[in-house]
Image (cartoon, rainbow, N blue to C red; front, side, top):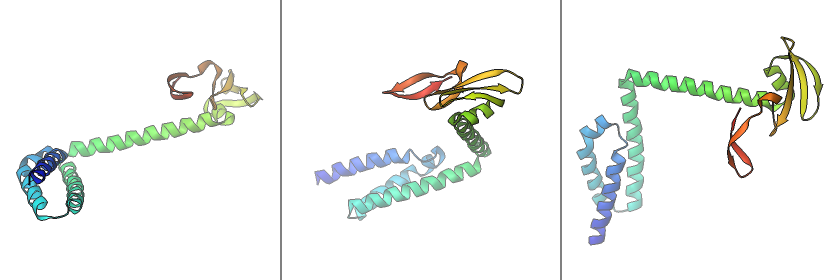
Length: 166
């Protein structure tokens, strides 16, 4: 009997922490009801696996529902979410755009505004920009850069550079 009590206290403690995932307004209003339902279900469902499968499934379904309701009722949060999505989309577009620009000599020359390529090898080349300036482009870590603007590796893991800083 003591083992069941210990498991029940442990389960109840875990569930109390999981209730913390709900929006605070919902949690304050329904905390005691949620705990009572949890204890009733734990007592009535014989299988622990079935019990926890039901609890986790119900928890995530209801948390999602409550947050959707919370977002629906808070205009500022809707604006914030849209702003984050727009900003995230812009950042992703920038990353993809820069990856494409640095991927080949021709792409990087176009990215830098070159109108005429004057020389090119597998590892470097020169071109002339629309303003008449001659620039040298070099291959560094399988990416193309201006010779005067090579990145410095800020964080290295083994021989892999995790973060470059131009």
